[in-house]
Image (cartoon, rainbow, N blue to C red; front, side, top):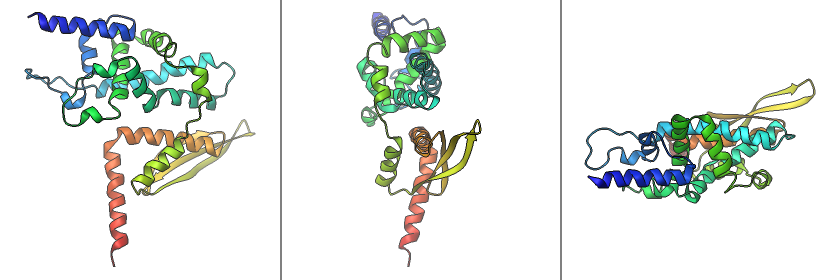
Length: 257
């Protein structure tokens, strides 16, 4: 009877080392660490759920807390600069790296069907952990975690801000590898305060509208549209399947006599 208690105690201690606080409701954190491939733990009959809903919540909380921190740190920078910096901090590669740095990847519970090679598992769990912390201790605890436990220890805001991340190139590379047709279309060009030009671009994939991006230059707006599109490609499996089906139909039609 002592083993489950010891496991819970070890989990609480591991979470304390990561978060800097002990969890109140441990069950929320257990769910945050449970990949969809392991919705039922061995020996338990009830449905336990997975971390996808907490991942959704944590994504929103991360956008808010990181945006807040970036806004305070760079007091004289433009909206576009702040948006780009936040995007770099919450992109999947960064969250995967952070999950590994804090040891979160060692706590994830998953099945054995090749999920160990899922390149997004760590980043998804990191988002879910933030969602669990938000439900358990609130927004201020998430702010302290990101500001002092993460950004203060593993990331330099100034270095990240100076680093250029080309989301458009990444999206083009994704499309080329899969022989998918991709284009960028200008939806609207307007004037802010009657002088500053603002552009709205959208991605078009296999003839379907993708995501939009707004910026003070064509390059900036296309970068924003690409970043949003890449994020959707990671999360919206049905949309990806639609894209692949349209691609297959186009390629099949091209070889017909």
